[in-house]
Image (cartoon, rainbow, N blue to C red; front, side, top):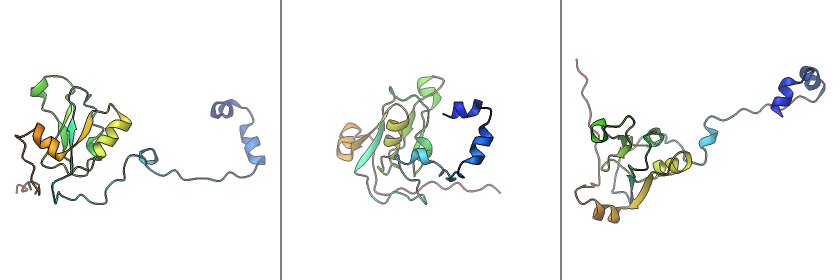
Length: 145
């Protein structure tokens, strides 16, 4: 339809004789509506999450679509030295994860479905070396004078 209107010779005269069209304002980020709402403010973990995000590094393309959606900013790229590839996959800093599952929904909807949400008891069995605490205080970098 738009292509037909683009190439029609009398497009302006046809539209001027018809009723005025109702203008609708497009809402920003309308295409993300089914994923999640952006948080108003970033909050820190107050208790252990019920589920934990795990990245399947073999399935992750390193596109980093999930990174801007994380409300606590706990997703980062794997260091280049680990795999020595051009675009490394992402990883989750487990002690900062609040279990919101936004990253998993974004990855499933927009990319490759490489992030899974695992119940905390199953996560602790699979990764006994990772200690999940009830609280998290972010490191504050002091400004150099």
